[in-house]
Length: 241
Ligand code: CAA
Image (cartoon, rainbow, N blue to C red; front, side):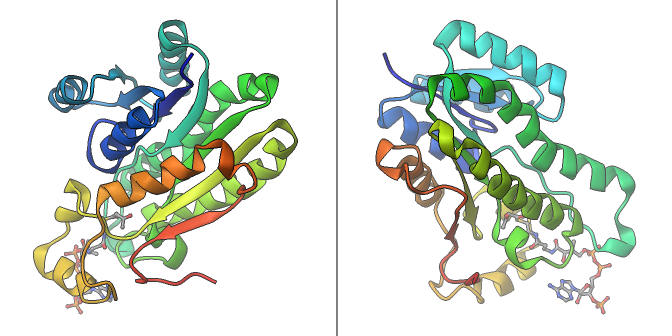
């Protein structure tokens, strides 16, 4: 039977490309989404996968969602914690709400989702957790104190959990995209985005498929010795040590 992969925020942008790639790799894919029904229906129609609506920022809602996925598809073997939002503002204008929203959706969600599948992965001695961080969690970004904190938090979460999963055949890794051609990046003011693209040595935005192919590799058996790692995919915009 096909292994089951869950991609949070898996119906649009980078998440959709990951869902598509993992389906092509032979996984039974569950794509989670929070609100955009139209994108979810489109994703189901285009990719032939099931989409599940639940809020990964809520532990209870995530627990319900995972119960449904596991009863319909089976135990989850691969999780891609991809769901994320931005609420950019310079810190002197940032509200507590903007801070809390981003920390909940971009960081606490990784706890909420991973906690549901961890015991089963330990029992089966196999699992793959892939946390989608960001270049801005590695280097910090003006206007993103909330997002940079959440995305850096995912890197610490990964390093700790990799050590716990190691003896149980579970790998835990980060993929840290640079600026990828998605709605999220296109929402950056045009002038600001132009200047950002100017700092990417490869000379262009990344493609969602380029993130998906890294996730594909990390989800395979042959990637068993890669764990606790941060895989940077950013066109040399930031070269982390
Ligand atoms: N470095 C230094 N100064 C900067 C700056 C930067 N990168 N960006 C803006 N500023 C300065 C401006 O020059 C301006 O200075 P002055 O007031 O002296 O003229 C000031 O900040 C602008 O202040 P405002 O009060 O007008 O700021 P604002 O409320 O209009 O918002 C902002 C500013 C929200 C930070 C806006 O510049 C912005 O959206 N920047 C992009 C942030 C970004 O890169 N987000 C990434 C989104 S995509 C993503 O997150 C995906 C991923 O993982 C890569």
